[in-house]
Image (cartoon, rainbow, N blue to C red; front, top):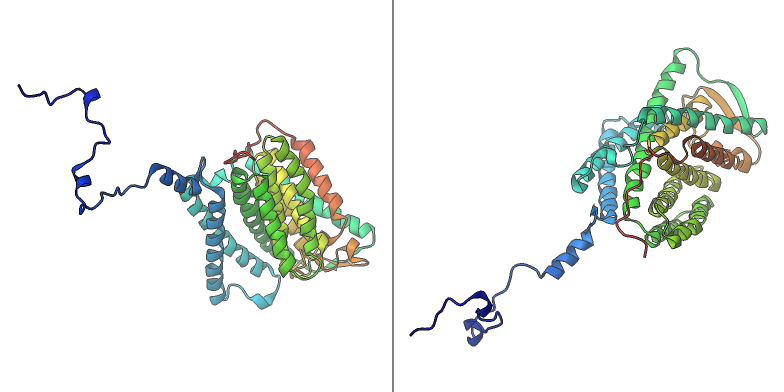
Length: 389
């Protein structure tokens, strides 16, 4: 009687039984083309987190692609003489330079939506009543800058002259500068308060934020000449203790404030390349970046910040004719001249370089908190990819 070869599963030969190849010294080993699960998982985790592509890789791709497109488009604009570098701070130059950045930004953001599988509006643009917030920010930006100019004039640190334009030129330059600064608001807020703020929020803990801020300060320490960099050092130090306390307490939304610390320091860092900036101007640029981050938390989107940015720059450059971050405009409505100590007048920096701006920024911050508060319809910040350890 032959033995039954159809044994039940629990009587199958054990899996460790030696195969025929094991007895052949010349047999080639059978290699699996698939990596071990633990190796594959480790590689995947290096690039992919709970929310898709990790924030660090997203930011790196975004910066490289944006810079490459900006340079390429800029070369085309210069080749067709759309931008004249020697013409100075004119509405035409600003308009085309900012269009270059806007096209580069939108193209880069579109690519990132495909990579990250998100919508363009997901980057801090989905809050309620965007039009209302935009026009509110536009008005507040103009009023805040006007309050600063009035304070400078009252203290004798800014003198008014006559109108520099008349007739149809007033409307013409006003519209040109208005379009230019609307694009400026979209580009700078779209870069810092939309994409970077959103992405850093989902991927930062305190130690990563500290490392980025320290890296930016180290670059300034070894490359920047003059005292303007101290404004960025100051904002970096001011954010250190509050962010560490939030980290220690494991506070809700601490990642948002750590991201705000990074993007505000980065915004001040970007302004150190402007000519005529002083340390107060650099500090105020970083500080207003933080105010704009607060506006995202209380309104639910970056639309208020976009409007306030455009209204502030239009009032400063076109309406009052003051220097804007060290740039002296051409084609402005009123004529003004700084006088006295640069610490109070702002000097070549313009009103943003005056110490009086700190009071205006504080008033803007209080206004945001009082008017909007922590409303239930504000957009929640995206969850971080990992909790602070």
